[in-house]
Image (cartoon, one colour):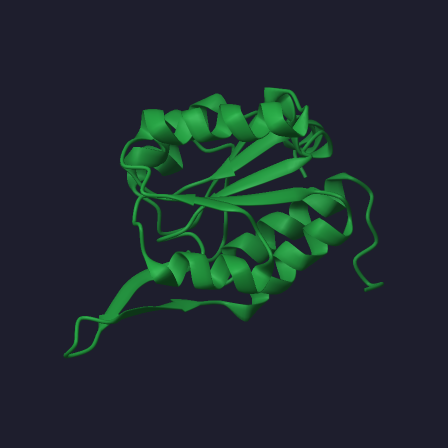
Length: 172
């Protein structure tokens, strides 16, 4: 691992995740009644659990005020904010959550996939993008995953963070 990236990841105590396109593959299924559902990866769920088990907080922020966001976050026992419509709003959430946790910006990582994530990616101490993120996001992220959003990208980041912090992943 690149020593600069490892240094950034060794300080991470909070990982903030965009929802659509990061925890999902960006697909929305809509039935004839207008009920939406999304596809998430159970591998990502285990990655979140691994982080929490090792003292790293996880928080989700989403543009969409949608019951699927709250349902998934409740299942993972992860706090969340939704209805955050622009990048500046996401930075405001990052600042608030960071202050509430008593952390510095260098201890915060953010993962996003689209243009409204750019300000948060630039604000955080470490930034990540899934493989299928918008080109502008890929261009500024400290690390781009090998897999797409909703297909294990969060798990990949979780393992990188834990590796940088010296956690032995063969023991669960």
